[in-house]
Image 1 (cartoon, rainbow, N blue to C red):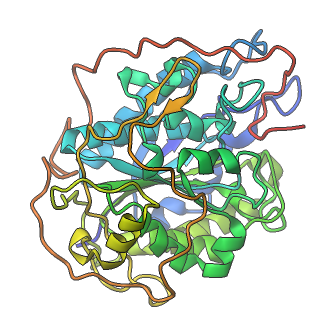
Image 2: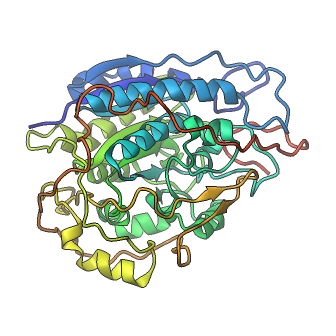
Amino acid sequence: MMRRIAVLDAPTNLGLRPPTSTSVPGCAKAPGALRDHDLLPRLRARDAGCVTPPRYDPGDWRPGDGVCHAREIADYSLALAERIGSIIDRGEFPVVLGGDCSVLLGSALAMHRLGEAVGGRIGLVFVDGHSDFRHPGNASYVGAAAGEDLALVTGRGQADLAALEGRRPYFRDIDVVVLGIRAQDEYRLDLQAAGITTRPVPALRAEGAARTAQWAHEQLADCAGYWVHIDVDVLDPAVMPAVDAPDPGGIAFAELEILLAGLVDTPHCLGVELTVFDPDYDPDGSYAAEIVNTVVAGLAPVTAPEAVPPRLLSARPTPAPRRGAPADRAERSAGVDRLDAGRSGGVNGLGAVGLAGVDSPGGGMADVDRDGAVEAEQSGTPGPAYAEPSGATAVIPVAVEREPVGPPASAGPGLLRRNSPPAQDSSGPNSASENDTDLHKADTA
């Protein structure tokens, strides 16, 4: 039985600075530009409509005011989370067309609700040319949420964005895999210190896109499922310059296609979002056409007749060691009973391993103080920012049927919507330096 795709437009540009003092970013036009190249019929997807964002207006924002458009982004994220939740409730595979990277806040909120509903944790595969990890703990200012989205969804920064509904963090550091950042990313050492696993472009290219997708599955083996974020600036500007912050040293379209296909080729991939394409830099539509070709080919495993519907499975009830610890690496190499194969096959002969692990939902959560600093409660030391793959040959575990933890993702309406959210986080917004006025997604000198 094939998984049906539902395409949802999220044409927000609230997370970016104005390209000029009198203009607005063009990435809000991206969903329409991609639809113009027959994305939906080629995916045989249901049209899930559009979540219309508030008006883009930085107004009198100044450094020190926190994230620009914060109230509007918060409201938009709540609305987007509802719509993503309704798609997953129907047993469908959401494909969210951004918009800038601030759409990740809505997706992250939906995933945290889902994790709460099933009694497990949801992971994040973050495919992006930039780490988007700027926050008050490592920068003199904050301002553009699209340059701070990974920091916000891992609990860093002001509570009106990082702790919606009192949920903080939406994704734990150890449940995040970052792929495609440049080798000299400004915040790469901060990611390493936080224990967030990364594979920059040189390592991704050396290991290959298919094997990198397999490796990402393995890093998230303790999660019940995962969400995929793709910023098209992961591509090299030689092939994709139509973004707000092009950065040399990216991957090619063919590599992104193989990577995407490997990431979605498991029932535990819950959905994908695509961000930051700017049609204003694509006057003849050629880049939009190339993106559509790549997305259609990359999502082929989702719509294949033998595709397995999404299902969140439990693992054996033992606490998982912190990722990067020797015991964890040994267990991941031999832990056939921890994984659900989903189905064999995959990209370039490598099977896509389904994720089945759920440990105690309350264990090891990070506390975030009022300055955005994270105090890890887990034992052990953070894992390395770049972990070597376990080997050149993918290990396909034997599929083991396990009882679901709570209702599956297709359990019906209302699974992801909470009528009585937890108490709001008491921490207040963080201020920023007053000597920098840049609102751009990417950090500038």
